[in-house]
Image (cartoon, rainbow, N blue to C red; front, side, top):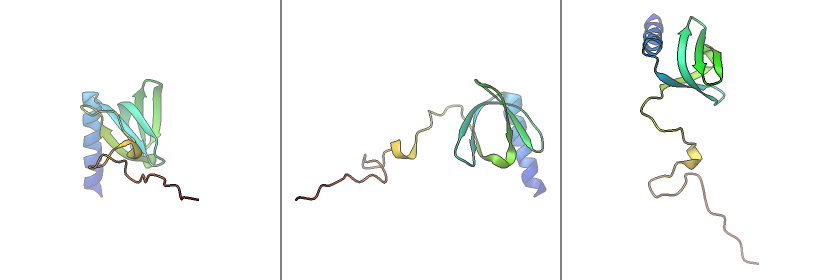
Length: 96
C-alpha cells in the first residue's frame, strides 16, 4: 500500500512541476481539464479556465496527461472497424 502511495505522489509531483495539462475523470463521469497546482493527502487543486477547483481524491477515477491527445470522444461517436457506430442497430419497420 505504501508503494502505491509513493507512486501516486511521484506522478502528481511530476505533473505539478512540469505544469502539464491534464484531464481528471471523476467517478460520476465528469471530466475536468486544467493543470494541477498542488495536492495533499486528500485534495487536488486544479487550475482550470473556470478558476481553481478543489477535487477530493476519493472522487477521482482517472488522471490523464492531456498533452498530445485529441479531444475526448464519446463512446457512441467512435466508429468501430466496419465504420458503424458500436451498439447502434438501424431501426427496421415492420410491414403492415
